[in-house]
Length: 550
RNA sequence: GCGCCAGUAGCUCAACGGAUAGAGCGUUGGCCUCCGGAGCCAAAGGCUGUGGGUUCGAUUCCCACCUGGCGUACCA
Image (tube, rainbow, N blue to C red):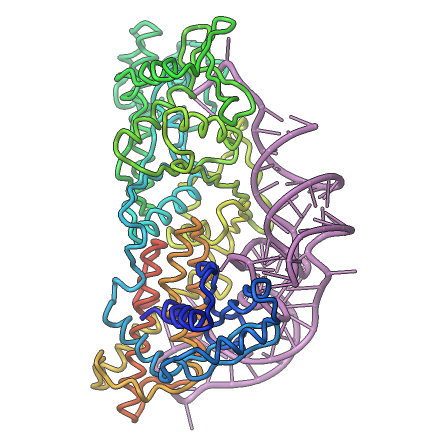
């Protein structure tokens, strides 16, 4: 049952009895106080009414209480606290019901239909196929994946998309870079492009091609060879990206190729639409978009004076394509180097005829890798890039995902490799998984001693504070999920799960589960099982494993 | 210059506008005859960068400033 709705309804009734009608009931907050002495649920309603009623909050709270009718098995005590809070202490009748509900709902506990099936698309990572994935991509992958999980759990219809920039100048540069390295392996000197890609992986790709196909490409014209090698290299990079995402547990619903978009002349449709709305003009031989009228700081070029569509124009066409596919809300996760790009893209979405709120950009802030307490310096030009591959190979998928989710996505993240790979008490991932493994062990131990979990067992033996605190926290799970989804704040989940694990460990140390007291054992096994359900459901959203033993 | 992000315990970070600002790590001291000690308990540690404002109430919202990171293309 939802105790917050129950209390809100009762308070509303009380207010009506007091003759208070014109009041924003949505502003009434029912929340869990931070401090135990303040009860299990608390409301600020009396404080909100001070200006309207011109009385002290305490006086108002007293009047509300006089007209409040509550079920005494659910709410054991109600108090008024100093500024004017009304604090509710919940009863065991309520707590037992919570455990029952969790056992009954099992994997569905935490799910809701709050989102009403609205179709979301989240586009993330979308790294250029001209090089290996870096650490920011790893963060974006974890965040995007968890966001989609969260949105789906609360009843949206969300899907994952990876955009492959497989067209344009950078792909030509890729072909030229590989071609130059390839040729030098056969003793030919082909100039390396000025803005080419210098990483070791370019030589590796060239070497692989040389081993596989020999010198067959040396006879081609430079143009033909570069074109061919570019296609081979591209396919290979995309394949590598797909493989690593799969290992990382991120399964995109769609890998969208820019080249397909270009083939369909989608840019022309955008230009035609913008022309019809008088949103473009020509100047200095280029075609400009009047985005300064739509919130951007200046107008931007859509077609260069060379007649080439800009990346921006193609990107507009891509976002139009997303809407055309029926998505109602788009979320893009971008790197910090693209935040200046947000206003123009928002302008474009509006120009396409969609409401501004239908398009969100979340900037995934940068990641500092730390090793031995020192920031690992990364320089793209020098080819010193820590690859996503190295990180997940070194620290493992569970730890990597957990650490990337563990921060607000708008915050810079210090990723300490030593901590992430440590298998000690320093590592919060193990703290959570240890709680889960311990639960599995207790259930196993009980079975071995002839006591099977009975989900219909009498729960009245539960009476300790440690039990009640744990149940109270378990009960917050659906609310945390909703909050995390609504605010696009995946980091709330690790925080919450750490609390659950801590309360469980505390309970474990204070309350012997499997004992000679059969009735108490059965009741506590139900609580242990309920905790297991919450941890498992939380792990599933974060995408980390739930080990039965460690 | 303009824009974005951040500034909270020694360190890494939390805190839908709420009450005495919380965790983890690190430090100090306790707890295994007992379902897993990868655990538990306790102590110490703070003028929430600075100054104003809005509010019954501000770490949170607004303005100004300081510090750090990033961005500011007819590149992608």
